[in-house]
Length: 368
Ligand code: GLY
Image (cartoon, rainbow, N blue to C red; front, side, top):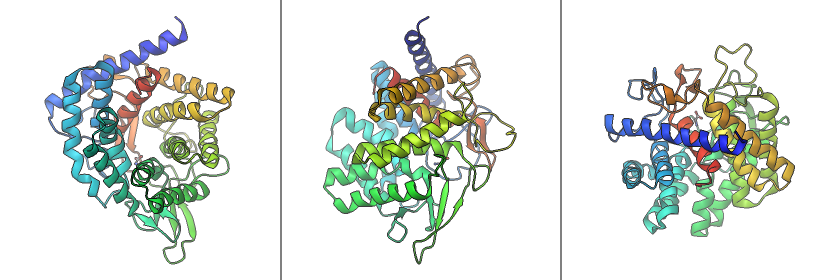
């Protein structure tokens, strides 16, 4: 079978699996917005750690609508978007990009209505309120002195809000966060630091830290995936070649340090990891690399990133990851990890892993 045909068939299987699993989720648990599975089931009493995943279910519903053209999915996508609208004013989270970009922004892209745009703008403006002048970063939900690499996935919504409202000060907030993250949260070898701790009085960078990696100075895979994708988005909004370079450095680290099948562990520097895979980070990377291939310029690098994204999606389409042949498993993508250190959702499905897996397939099928 030719490679293109194989990729297309894999993507169709991913969407067919998503249709099956999501139809069951929305009928078994209407209006429920889960974060991770336990023993393959979405509904359980596990703690959320932080409540940041509510945009990924409406995001998946929109992708199913784009794939199928079926109004059933559009109706659900709109309903699940409405469920989270109030969170545009939520000042407790640094994840408003995750909440609104794949849900309300997708809705606006499809319909072009001012109301949807205004919700996305408000979420971006709320996100901008986290900015710390001293240090030049957006603070994480953990503490005012904490900056997360994950926030690189949430600056896109600030750039967008700033551009739509012609707000140069807001644009500068997003820009400063990207520059600070580039300086302190990406190392010279292209690996990412999960968290940077700053001095609130002086703005000085104090130290590296982590919540979900092996150790403060090691290399948490999902953080790197957010960096690849996030710096690419920052380059798309600013045209700044420094962000393109950083996205490439992070992508090259991923490729260099991951086995040939393309599926990374939770932390590349964890000695003898008990679990070999963190499938959600691989799915996020497969999507980010496709964006990077589109803007990198050099045709050889573009080919490398696009081919690697295909390799990841192929790997994740194997039965060990894609839950197509496991009717009892409620998620789409197995062997993801929500929070290894806290033992939450480890070797399970996660809403973000499922979302970015579907997004990667949607990009390969040129639906988005
Ligand atoms: N943003 C939190 C995580 O990646 O788990």
